[in-house]
Image 1 (spheres, rainbow, N blue to C red):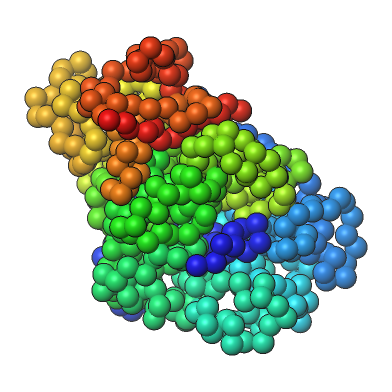
Image 2 (image 1 turned 180 degrees about the vertical axis):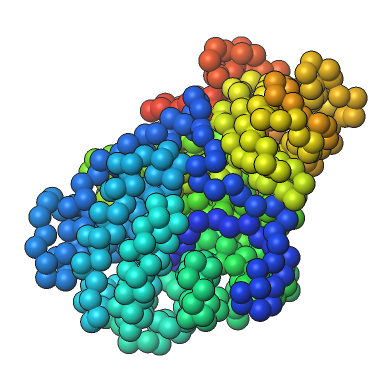
Length: 611
């Protein structure tokens, strides 16, 4: 397996809005009815809390990012006047303009959520400015290192500009972009061997990725009804070496670039929805089970050194001493949330919500805002000793920035996933409402002509109590489904208007509260969050993370802390103020902190268990 990473290799990313999954539908245009559907951008408002802070920071930053800078590389490559400063970094050199579509997508989603007129206007100006650089010769795409990768992101951004902002100009620009890009990129998904067989200037020109494009192309078919996009989507599904073997239970993940292939799973979900072929559903669910079983850290992250490991060889545990590049946080989280939304909508299986929650609180919510020069939060770091990390030696784990490559892919997926928090929190079922994430927020919707508002207040997971208050224009009967995490302890309880429900919640399911709801009704969910340890893998059972509920609690320490084996089964944490905890170990006290609250401190993810 190559030891290249994103410092030198660009791997593909699908930039698409999530859609609910459905059972079947062999004929294009025959839209099957989903089990669950997401609410549109704008139905959910985040209220005061860490998700809203991250949402607002990213919205503000990209709203004020110079339009001339964003468009400059497009204008330069097509011979137009190009005022403004250079973006620099990847955006100008390694993959010119590749992330423009991601920034456009994020801004369109922010505009829809906030109903911000300045953001809507900026999206329309960017589409108009980009449109001026598109010509029939595809001048921008000539001799472009990653034409498929770049086209994919442009499709995403233009679709979101049309859907979220109502920019009617975006669809004609999508067609023009497709005509311009098609002659310069492979016409189907290629294996690595096939890429090398094609003429190429150097090795980097074989790194373009097509097979993650299928999701966006199928979504373009949804928006336009044009069979051209449907047929393109089919061609960009990587069947022979990926979906076919996965559907048969063959684990082809080891050695593959992790983020790209998790993103490709969302293409597989769209393939299932559009083609009605169950092999794609089997492939995706099998892959997710493989990732959960053999590839995931306690944080829910995966892909040390950007690659899937070989199961049963202790390679996940070995990575704790081998690399500081443990997880591509914004990109990986974005891909993870997308495929879990598909699967949750299709199956109503609460495990997919549990998985989203774990990644939320232990990875992406701790990602810092992009800097003005394009330096971006990149890797979560689970290393437990002091070794050289690129240019410097550090003790423990502190590395979070890609300081050498400016404006990398993670600078685009961070604002996209922040905007997508609003479509991940709640789902609409055929008979009621599903609460998936416990985050401060307000959902507004209409059911049977009744105007409904559900306001959620909580400091979860720092605290265990979640309150949900109903406001209805008229009484309405429907079930309210609450996700009960699989790890939830026996003291978990639910009360309605102060009366405790007698049926005990079943962990790992959605619990249904069926009643005739009235304005002012109050639901209180108190989630018992047991403290436990989780080993990095079976071959390294002496490397354990300490968990409380969905969160890993990171030790603030320059050296890897130790626990005696007899202490593991009787961990007793104590509050240390704010969201911090402390653990008494022998004669010392170790401070524990959730990932989003860690600043420049050196931290340890895994503890050493000693006899």
